[in-house]
Image (tube, rainbow, N blue to C red; front, side, top):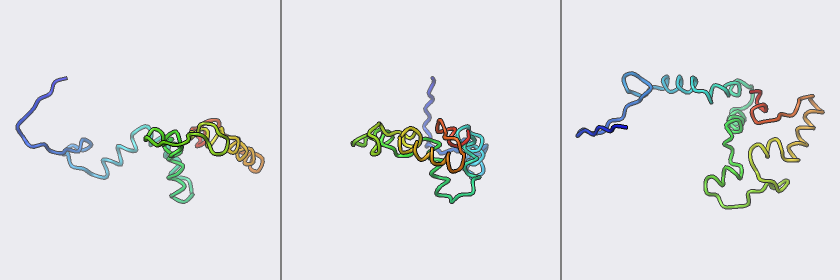
Length: 125
Protein backbone atom coordinates (compact mmCIF):
# COMPACT_ATOMS: atom_id res chain seq x y z
CA UNK A 1 0.00 0.00 0.00
CA UNK A 2 1.33 3.42 -0.95
CA UNK A 3 0.82 6.45 1.26
CA UNK A 4 1.24 9.97 -0.09
CA UNK A 5 1.68 12.79 2.41
CA UNK A 6 1.02 16.44 1.53
CA UNK A 7 1.61 19.69 3.37
CA UNK A 8 -2.05 20.68 3.25
CA UNK A 9 -4.76 20.91 5.90
CA UNK A 10 -6.95 17.83 6.28
CA UNK A 11 -10.45 18.07 4.90
CA UNK A 12 -13.60 16.11 5.51
CA UNK A 13 -15.23 14.65 2.41
CA UNK A 14 -18.50 12.66 2.26
CA UNK A 15 -17.77 9.65 0.04
CA UNK A 16 -21.41 8.97 -0.83
CA UNK A 17 -21.88 12.11 -2.94
CA UNK A 18 -19.95 13.37 -5.95
CA UNK A 19 -19.47 16.85 -4.46
CA UNK A 20 -18.23 15.49 -1.11
CA UNK A 21 -20.99 17.19 0.91
CA UNK A 22 -23.22 15.19 3.26
CA UNK A 23 -26.87 14.69 2.32
CA UNK A 24 -29.54 12.71 4.09
CA UNK A 25 -30.64 11.33 0.70
CA UNK A 26 -27.19 9.84 0.02
CA UNK A 27 -27.05 8.24 3.47
CA UNK A 28 -30.59 6.88 3.18
CA UNK A 29 -29.84 5.44 -0.27
CA UNK A 30 -26.68 3.79 1.01
CA UNK A 31 -28.52 2.27 3.98
CA UNK A 32 -31.34 0.95 1.80
CA UNK A 33 -28.91 -0.51 -0.74
CA UNK A 34 -26.77 -2.23 1.89
CA UNK A 35 -27.46 -5.90 2.60
CA UNK A 36 -28.11 -6.05 6.36
CA UNK A 37 -30.77 -3.34 6.51
CA UNK A 38 -32.61 -4.34 3.36
CA UNK A 39 -33.13 -7.86 4.75
CA UNK A 40 -34.94 -6.38 7.76
CA UNK A 41 -37.09 -3.80 5.97
CA UNK A 42 -40.22 -5.86 6.58
CA UNK A 43 -39.88 -5.12 10.31
CA UNK A 44 -40.48 -1.41 9.66
CA UNK A 45 -43.73 -2.14 7.79
CA UNK A 46 -45.37 -4.00 10.71
CA UNK A 47 -48.19 -2.06 12.37
CA UNK A 48 -46.86 -1.96 15.95
CA UNK A 49 -45.49 0.93 18.03
CA UNK A 50 -42.09 2.25 16.96
CA UNK A 51 -40.36 1.13 20.17
CA UNK A 52 -41.42 -2.47 19.43
CA UNK A 53 -40.11 -2.19 15.85
CA UNK A 54 -36.79 -0.93 17.17
CA UNK A 55 -36.61 -3.78 19.68
CA UNK A 56 -37.44 -6.32 16.93
CA UNK A 57 -34.72 -4.80 14.73
CA UNK A 58 -32.20 -5.07 17.59
CA UNK A 59 -33.14 -8.73 18.09
CA UNK A 60 -32.86 -9.36 14.34
CA UNK A 61 -29.40 -7.70 14.29
CA UNK A 62 -28.50 -9.70 17.45
CA UNK A 63 -27.36 -6.64 19.37
CA UNK A 64 -29.68 -6.87 22.39
CA UNK A 65 -27.62 -6.54 25.55
CA UNK A 66 -27.83 -10.14 26.64
CA UNK A 67 -25.14 -11.30 29.01
CA UNK A 68 -22.90 -12.63 26.22
CA UNK A 69 -23.05 -9.25 24.43
CA UNK A 70 -22.39 -7.43 27.71
CA UNK A 71 -19.33 -9.63 28.29
CA UNK A 72 -17.99 -8.51 24.88
CA UNK A 73 -18.14 -4.97 26.30
CA UNK A 74 -16.04 -5.95 29.35
CA UNK A 75 -19.02 -6.43 31.65
CA UNK A 76 -18.13 -8.58 34.62
CA UNK A 77 -20.95 -10.64 35.99
CA UNK A 78 -22.72 -13.97 35.89
CA UNK A 79 -23.25 -14.97 32.23
CA UNK A 80 -25.94 -17.53 33.06
CA UNK A 81 -29.63 -17.19 32.19
CA UNK A 82 -31.63 -16.30 35.30
CA UNK A 83 -34.42 -18.69 34.22
CA UNK A 84 -32.47 -21.89 33.55
CA UNK A 85 -28.77 -21.37 34.38
CA UNK A 86 -27.52 -21.84 30.77
CA UNK A 87 -25.29 -19.31 29.00
CA UNK A 88 -27.46 -16.34 28.03
CA UNK A 89 -27.38 -15.44 24.34
CA UNK A 90 -30.04 -13.90 22.13
CA UNK A 91 -30.78 -17.28 20.58
CA UNK A 92 -31.02 -18.90 24.00
CA UNK A 93 -33.21 -16.16 25.48
CA UNK A 94 -35.71 -16.09 22.61
CA UNK A 95 -35.64 -19.71 21.41
CA UNK A 96 -33.78 -22.25 23.54
CA UNK A 97 -34.60 -21.33 27.14
CA UNK A 98 -37.29 -23.61 28.62
CA UNK A 99 -39.36 -20.52 29.48
CA UNK A 100 -39.14 -19.28 25.87
CA UNK A 101 -40.07 -22.75 24.61
CA UNK A 102 -43.09 -22.78 26.94
CA UNK A 103 -44.20 -19.41 25.57
CA UNK A 104 -43.73 -20.59 21.96
CA UNK A 105 -45.77 -23.75 22.70
CA UNK A 106 -48.54 -21.57 24.16
CA UNK A 107 -48.51 -19.38 21.05
CA UNK A 108 -48.60 -22.50 18.87
CA UNK A 109 -51.62 -23.87 20.75
CA UNK A 110 -53.48 -20.55 20.88
CA UNK A 111 -52.75 -19.23 17.39
CA UNK A 112 -51.42 -22.24 15.44
CA UNK A 113 -48.12 -20.42 14.79
CA UNK A 114 -45.11 -22.69 14.40
CA UNK A 115 -42.23 -21.91 16.79
CA UNK A 116 -39.20 -20.39 15.01
CA UNK A 117 -36.01 -22.44 14.69
CA UNK A 118 -33.62 -19.47 14.42
CA UNK A 119 -33.54 -15.73 14.93
CA UNK A 120 -33.91 -15.27 11.15
CA UNK A 121 -37.02 -17.45 10.96
CA UNK A 122 -38.38 -15.56 13.96
CA UNK A 123 -38.81 -12.65 11.56
CA UNK A 124 -39.70 -14.62 8.46
CA UNK A 125 -36.35 -14.17 6.70
